[in-house]
Image 1 (cartoon, rainbow, N blue to C red):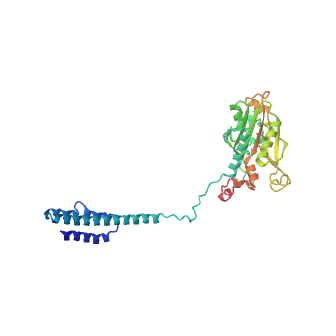
Image 2 (cartoon, rainbow, N blue to C red):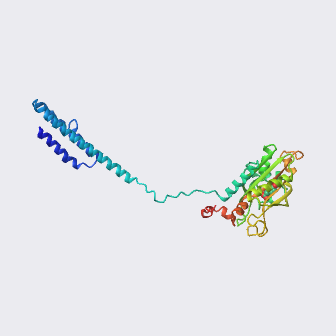
Image 3 (cartoon, rainbow, N blue to C red):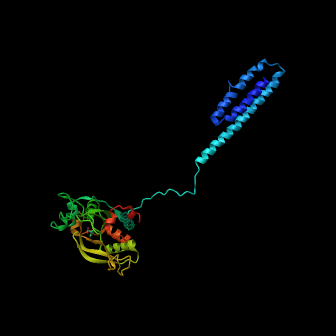
Length: 339
Ligand code: DAH
């Protein structure tokens, strides 16, 4: 029996050499130490031994079991280490490799301009109003005091969706909508798209953007208009900016004016940005016409107000030194990536 035990031990030592992984190792463990394993089977013969032999063989059997067990444990640790090392080497991270660059989106120069203007006016206590791009002709023209025979109404100038429905040619109809819906005091701006039958070129597009402004309250005068718009110009183009108001004519304001600002590039000396005039025309404005107030249900004897409207595309082009309006609409990433 002693020989049998020794033989088992030697065979184990030989077999264990061909083990390649944890799975093989478990198979060999079951084969030698399992309930139906070789060592267990051999020990069944113990009953036949004499009382004298039994403790000796018992000890040998224990030694064999312990040596097999400790061998198995050592092998198990070895294979586990190999497995972890293999995994680690597969998952190595080379921190010196260049990172994969994620292209971040950018805001369109026009969006930036709109955001900036909104911030300035919100800071002065204005709120933002919206109106539809597809508008009643009477909101776009009649309520704004535009005469029935005015050429702006012509099919050549205005996109008609139906007889009485147009693509708005200006953001001014939002004034009407606001005055109809809310009671004064009013202080709103309204940026948005407007449409005119224009051929596309470096300075024209059938779709462009405007921002309207409207202030109505008791006792509003031309000084409020000038003070507000002068402050706006300084915030947009810098503290040193000066403004001038030239008389103009709009149907919905009386008196009306156009506001110019000193060129932010040359400071008024004359340069390419301002076509050597030193001034840049920025917006139209005026005191809201009593007819407009009355038609919108506001008593012109009690309230007065001013309004203004500006072309946002032109402001964006001027501010960012872009020389062609079409660039704003072509969506060329090489252009848009520069802002
Ligand atoms: N709607 C005018 C335009 O498209 C701009 C404008 C001028 C708006 C004077 C106003 C204003 O509110 O008071 O040319």
